[in-house]
Each structure stands twice: as structure tokens, then as C-alpha cells.
Amino acid sequence: MFALRHLVEALATIVDLALNIYMWMVIARALLSWVNPDPYNPIVRFLYSLTEPVLGPIRRRLPLIFGGLDLSPILVLVAIVFLQRFLVSTMMDLARLIG
Image 1 (cartoon, rainbow, N blue to C red):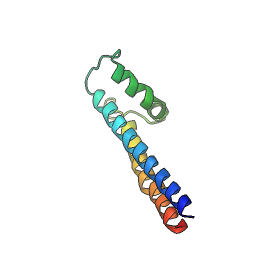
Image 2: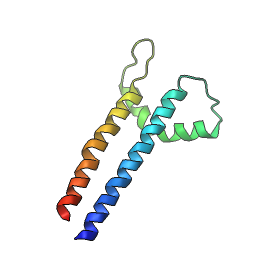
Image 3: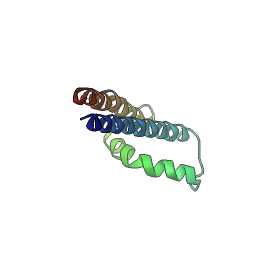
Image 4: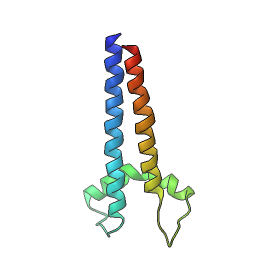
């Protein structure tokens, strides 16, 4: 059973790391929206291609407020923090119960 415990712990760590990386990508995307980046820059295109599938549907459903303020990155960040606190913690607790 210890192998299953380590597997679940490893999966929880990977999920936590992936959520952290995606959180920083959303933050970078939000910061880039304050300036006028070159749309042909490979880094900008990479960030947009990875964050737009999540931000786009939220942006379509969420109304713009205060002269076009986009709240979708904040909503995504809140969802990421929730997943880190709930999902990763639950996976770690499950690993402790297995072992």
C-alpha cells in the first residue's frame, strides 16, 4: 500500500505545481493586458494560447465593469486557489489514509 500512497502524493504534488504554473501564467497575461505587447512575440502568443481557453468563456459570461475592467483573471485565480486548497489537500489526506 505504500506504493499507492507515494503515487497519490506525487500526483498531488504535480497537480499543485501545474496549478501554480498556470496561476503565474494568468498573472503574466493580466499584466500584459496593461501594456500594448507585440502580438507576434512568441512569448505573448504562447501565454495567450494557453490562457484564452479558460479566460475566454468566463469573459463572455462575465459583464465588464467600470469602463471595461476585465475580472476574468481574478475569477480564474480564485478558482485556482480553491483547487489548490481543496483538491490538493484532499489528495494529500487520502495519501495519509492509504499509508
